[in-house]
Image: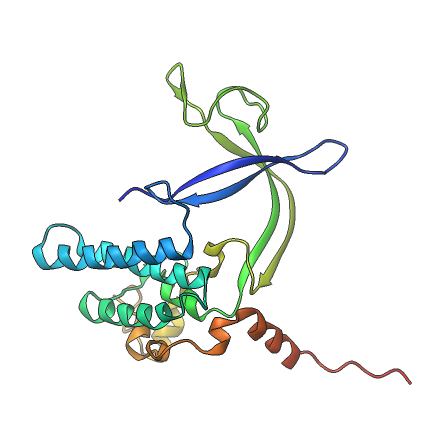
Length: 252
């Protein structure tokens, strides 16, 4: 399957003394359609059907197609939680079927002594996403000019050399913030990581590096449906902050 594409539009920022040119990204699928919640839903349901056909007749990689379908259904819900509320339970049931039929396994990193799994289901359970503020300076791989400082086109070859904008350096690092209303969908997705030595001590594994399966979807109550907090993460986050903020002293 063709990867998701992004197109960009150029806009000038108000920063002085010189105006900074920035890019706004719009995600498109392989057919050139904007990835709206409805588009993600439709694509996910189609991929689910395709994956089942591939699995039944052995005509392709059914598991990979089904896992792509799961990611689409999760992202459709994250894009429009109330409009796609039914996908919360559907994705969990889908994940349960994949877990039972194909298994979901952690990868082991011997240098970090850590197990990691990347699964879209966990994004449905995150109370907040993250937002990183930093400024990256890029340069043209052909002539070294700064962004929009030359006429070379990214993706075009010049004398056999492919033009691309490379990150030259980090000009400024602003902050890392936690938010229940992120600008980018991908920030809801984070890997689940487990300390291998802790797993060994607790008896979940007998030796470092052995295969570790993820049982999350086999016991998760998400198949029942979303809670109000799942449908309104901003309200949930505000309540959590209020509940954990100590009362301010009243001035005498």
